[in-house]
Length: 500
Image (cartoon, rainbow, N blue to C red; front, side, top):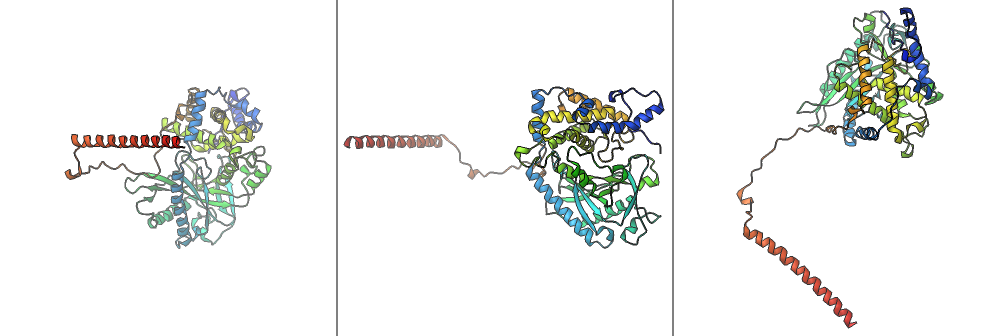
């Protein structure tokens, strides 16, 4: 397969446009590295590449702050959703450990990942990601060409008679991602038929399988209306404890942000391969059985310990606005995708998370992220993303040779359209962040039809003139009695004073 250059060199990136295809190809190969260096130069380097951030008006400042407050999850919804998901995962673990049909899935453990557990979920707690870590014998991997270190074939180092042999290809070494997914779907479907929630709560259903998705998706729907309340992605993953692939071996660039010790700690942890193949058409048989490398557990840890100092966000006096900026960016992405359906189908929250990590590795100091600077911080983050889209270069944070804005994965037409709508949003005051009405509660309750209660004639007391006169007289008598009591008490007090 012909390798598609991830980025075209632009004059805005510095330097002249290439005159020949050969010069263009050389420039394309060098731009991701130069882009990576620009992220690491420090704040001044980022500013030289960033879109100019216009002064923030008081109205825009109020809008950003108000929208940030509205994105918080409701505590009552969180409690109910987490209870449903925890019950599901606990019972699924028990089911897999007890199943006799496929013993390979017995020795597994759970790893929670995704935006909810990273505390950057917005609007409603309605999406959860659960990774099922499958233990395997020692593995070897081979990087697929043309994908710059993101996709691999995974195989055993030697033949085995263990339970994993059911999921090997004809060579008896290569692990088949399609066989793993097929069996995972079968087991989850079987589990759902036995799992029940409390009466009236709703029930779980298995969603239709998506070709390029590494997950088995379960949706919790209400009993009556069949409305989806939340969903859970169950992702099987192969755990690889013996080091990171060459494309990611340098580790994430976090030395100035989280420190060198943090980077060494990340590199000492295992990586995971999930059964996701490339989205391109006309894939070869090898590509159809490929695996994508995943750093979800590292991303979760980076989100948790996101400050330059360990005391960041330990109390109200040390709060920062980093995660709130990412929530606002995700909110803007959702608004863009809803407004321009179909034209921005390639845009996803991972683009926002990636530029967020790059941005934090440059603007490291906690003093730059105080809550009072929310609007300024968000506009700088948005400017960096707009600049990355304009350059067509957004290196994967862990696999920097893979460009998330490569034409192979994000078409040039969609990218240029994204640049245009981002510029329009920025220049018009971010209308898509306008405060919307609160989302419906997690506990979906259909509106009850109005009921007419029949009232007997005996229960109704007619309000005639005599009744009204009696009520008026009663009030008059009460006031007169109270006035007399007060007068007599006053006379008594005066008489007592005279006697003394």
